[in-house]
Length: 185
Image 1 (tube, rainbow, N blue to C red):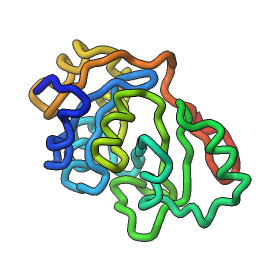
Image 2 (cartoon, rainbow, N blue to C red; image 1 turned 180 degrees about the vertical axis):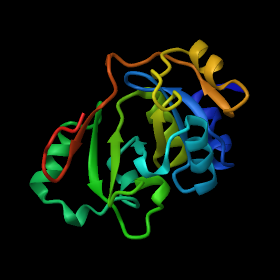
Image 3 (cartoon, rainbow, N blue to C red; image 1 turned 120 degrees about the horizontal axis):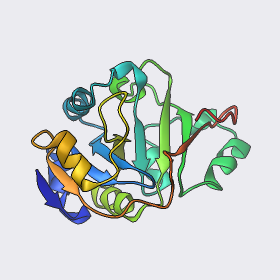
């Protein structure tokens, strides 16, 4: 596993790699959202069923547009999202037709977040698109909070580790249904 800076992982991700990186609250695992092979590998590493779906994190809202169907959201609903972004709020939004089930799971929606974390911002800006993001842990276990925990859990299984500080949040992002406004987590 290579320890990398955010601007050094673009090629690894574009070639189907899985990387670990700090987020607002915990370390995350991520990959290219347009690479089903990479997503399948990430799900296997986590021992997570595909049916649960995943989160996409982005550096700006425009990066999410190829994946979500914003035409199914009202201006009022979108404005409620925009006042929370960038930040530790994940919104469930309708998907565009044809989106990989590996991303949305057994749902017709997708969890998305515009992150304020500088590492995620840098990675997504470099990629020019969002990153699949899920907590760095095996299903049912607590998420990794440090590089040392990443190495202990995933050494030899991921392609790069981006060290850095976690954000100020003490728990994973709040998840809100963008249509109903209901807080899900």
